[in-house]
Image 1 (cartoon, helix red, strand yellow):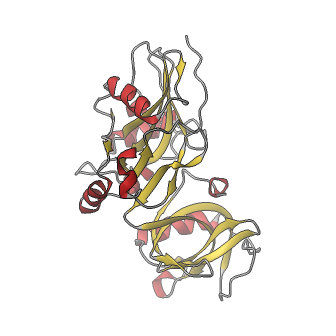
Image 2 (cartoon, one colour):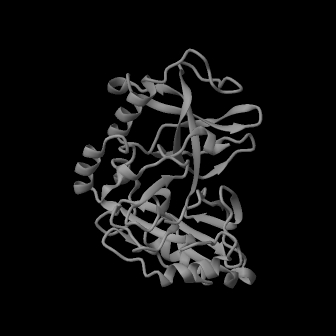
Image 3 (cartoon, rainbow, N blue to C red):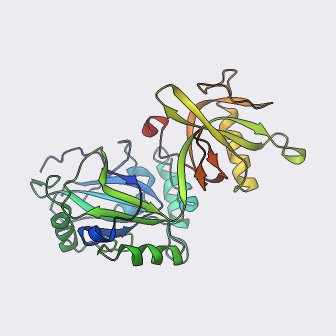
Length: 317
């Protein structure tokens, strides 16, 4: 049986659509709102899924175990999503599936209620050949020739050129955005590359929670606002607070997480000028939406989007 190489996922750089003069030099794929993974198929009918950080998450997704290429060994890049009724990726639904790798029985029960789907968008190794130095257009042709389609996995569409129209389609459909992939680019494991550009319909940022402010009234023991940070050369930089965009269920879930991380020490490089802050160990990553940044680096008009249990603070460095 072929020994499969361990490959870290290539990452996209946030940015804008390529200029019109370069439009046909890129393929455009819908940006999926899920959990990135590398799928290893040794050719014996088994499947191993590793998260972006390299953790084995296979037991969390028993409903994906049927993904197979017969006896052909392969390493595939993709994203696990939990589709809503319209077939769109719903990260909040997926959160119920994440973190269950250590509880196979519970993972199987949740899978019956919230099925997962594996979107496979790149092939990195096939049979005995490592394809990471092969250009994207050739890897994509190889992937499409595999004809990967099943009840729980598929290959998403990729359109060469027409980036403006594709982005407008995602905006109209309420999707997160696009990933533009340069046709001549090799696969760059573990690299955040300009060869892949993620274009979002809204600005988002991954932040680290460094503290929180209690709410008022019935929310006294729940977060009224979270104190956000992002890693910089001098330590964790305070980038503002977020107190909108969440449900009562979100607040309750966050309260449980943050209580376990309570500390007396402010984790920010410079202590924010806030009163009544409750500090926490900076271990929790979340994603927020915002309009723009101030000159001081603060996020303007931030709104809560989601926790990111698939990321660690080291992934933001």
